[in-house]
Length: 117
Image (cartoon, rainbow, N blue to C red; front, side, top):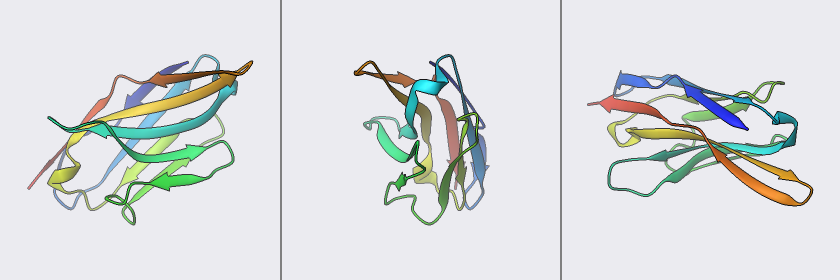
């Protein structure tokens, strides 16, 4: 599985961005996808995720202003509103597969989100 993330950029505080992640390869084996972020000097953290049956999880810091969604081709989106400087980070797309009992984790290359105050 390969993951191509896009949509990052520079935005002013209060603005919005929509990130996209397009999987390719063995996408039928994907059972989970999510967005993580890593700010300078900090550990990578979950932003939001979505399972094959549509269940979603959000970090407390983004609840109410962020929506993760998915289309039929398993492309996922992260709509982020009311962005704040603390949302500045590199955002990574993540996918997980289970094939013959073997669990694999895949990461995209990341897209930079910078929120100016």
